[in-house]
Amino acid sequence: MRLLCNSLAGMLFLLDHVASGVGSDKLSVSVMEGDSVIFHTGVDTNQQEDIKWYFSDTRIAQISGDLSFICTDVQCNEGTERFRDRLKLDHQTGSLTIMNITNTDSGEYKLKIIGITSSIEKAFNVNVKSVPAAERDEVKTNEGESVTLDSGERRKPNDVLTWFFNDTLIARITGDPNKTCTDVQCKDDEERFRDRLKLDHQTGSLTIMNITNTDSGEYKLKISSSSSLSITREKRISVNVIDSGLSSAAVAGIVVVLLAAAALIAGLIYCRPMRSRRAPQHKQIFTNDVLPWSQLPNKVNRNKKWQYNNSSIKNSDVVQKYFRFSNVYCCKSQKMTA
Image (cartoon, rainbow, N blue to C red; front, side, top):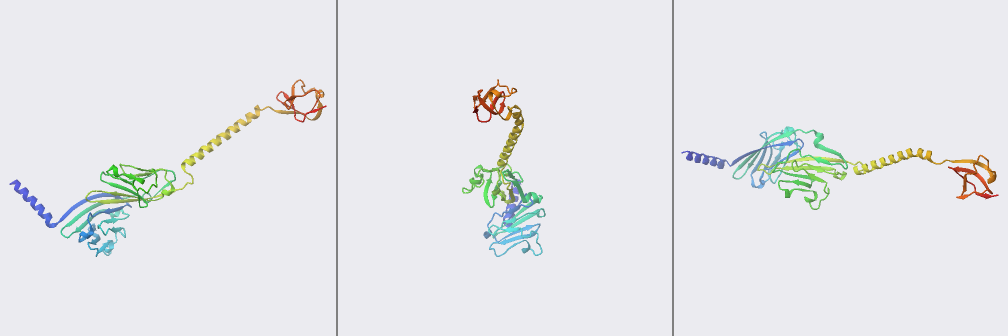
């Protein structure tokens, strides 16, 4: 009896879903204010009759299979302009993008896919977290420093995180290590950063080392989920690198040179007076007298060693302008004989 009841219940469940052709799923996602969010349909438009999007039971987008009717926001409901040109509808898949999302966009989004033989319904619950505008709009840094562009979350095993610089792929991280790449590994003809990129495998955050002013521009992070209800989040970060005119290495070199010069000058100032005290003094004894050696004044000790051009002075020599260097007396004028 129990087996018969279970079989009957299963048949009723199957008949109900086959008759209605409606399946229902729901996915919750948290995003940061200012990001872009893409809700994927997982179907092709030309294979459906109609694709409709709702926010809090208000139609916000619709596209027909033959593209004869397409609308977003106020085009779908006159007088309702909630998103103000922030909605984008993919004509091939019917996927919906909300750009520059705000905290007032939090809530439940519904997707209705009306096919030829069946219908599908999906629901997305979106929670938008507030972020100060200064933090999400621009990052300012000095040339030569390292900058980390934060993903804002921990990466889930099935998530694929992709980084772009000015719409050029520069890094990707997936669950498959063989598909993880940075810079030239992602694109053979691109080697802009030259081993200056580092990926955090837990968060997906990207670090740019020794940043230069040519690295200024817009960086975009795409976080894609590979579940049946696929959502892609896009985060844009504008990086402004301030050109200091000198790299950090050059500044450090200049500082070292200046310190060395200061130490040298200080040493010279300290040593100069000591040299002055220690240096032998030249003392001029006579300046105008021209006298033969035998007639030198008595106060000049003639027993000292006298020299001129390293030769001894004889008694017959005439000496002019006497100088004493230590205990040796010297002649400054030319040597003359009497």
